[in-house]
Length: 62
Image 1 (cartoon, rainbow, N blue to C red):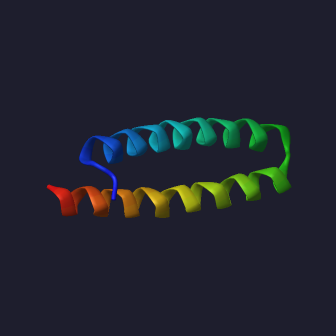
Image 2 (cartoon, rainbow, N blue to C red):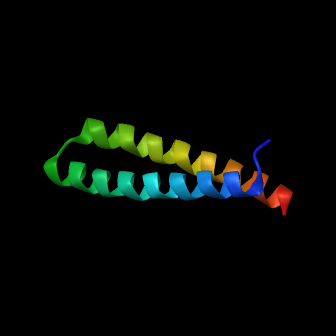
């Protein structure tokens, strides 16, 4: 199992990736790339699930 600091680092990295992906989605939407937007939104959903799991693990350590 990961340490508290490792979990915090993973969460921070995932949040940064999430924010970047949101920006990419906005660009894709403005240029009309619907297929790419759908795939990116699916990745966002997966990231949200992963964040929830990491936060649960972090809470268990606290």
